[in-house]
Amino acid sequence: MFNKDDIKGVIFDLDGVICSTDELHYLAWKELADSIGVYFDRQINSRLRGVSRMASLDIILERSEKKYSQEEKEALAAEKNEAYRKLLERMSPSDVSDEVRSTLTALRGKGLRLSIGSSSKNTPLILERTDARRYFDAVSDGNNITRSKPDPEVFLKAAEFIGLAPSVCLVVEDAEAGIDAGISGGFFTAAIGSAVHCGKANVNLNRFSDLLKYV
Ligand code: B16
Ligand code: MG
Image 1 (cartoon, rainbow, N blue to C red):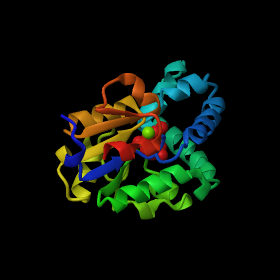
Image 2: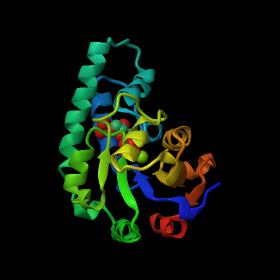
Image 3: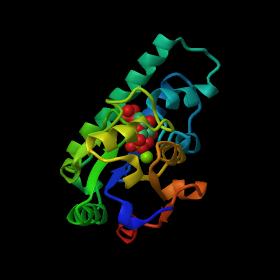
């Protein structure tokens, strides 16, 4: 049973929760898909939310007539990532809203421990470009895991990094795969954005600052 007094830490997904990189992922995947003649649009892009880089590529290649070897797929993923990192250089502190910043500051003020729990290997660059690293006690991301969401590894590591048990942490996610990961790791979960529709989270947030009602 969810009880706000039990929560000692909050673990945040990055893309879609703290900031939005959807459009940049789209542009980089689109460039790659065009270069190999594979159809790709924004609807397909929406299936990539919260999914790892290689799993995203597999979704894109569903439309390809050519079968790619593992080595070729790794080269394609590296090419996309290079284009994506160039686009990330355009991010700035204004890509993290005042609402997100003031809510994170208020949560810290309540004595809660905060961590990032993101599948993205580009998390350090995104946090640096947006000047958001300073709100978090720890960062667990695609660089310290071997299994992506819906596996709970990234959140279990985040809880370990802030020295708390999953049972006293709330995971905030915008993707169903992330809510599933939180549930299977024994965390309480809060859904925002498209994850609200899956109906599986303990709480649904209309907006980021609603978190202050629940913890
Ligand atoms: P990268 P999150 C996820 O971040 C993104 O939502 C997903 O679209 C992306 O494919 C994944 O990170 C891997 O990202 O290619 O940068 O390592 O939502 O878990 O913060
Ligand atoms: Mg996300």
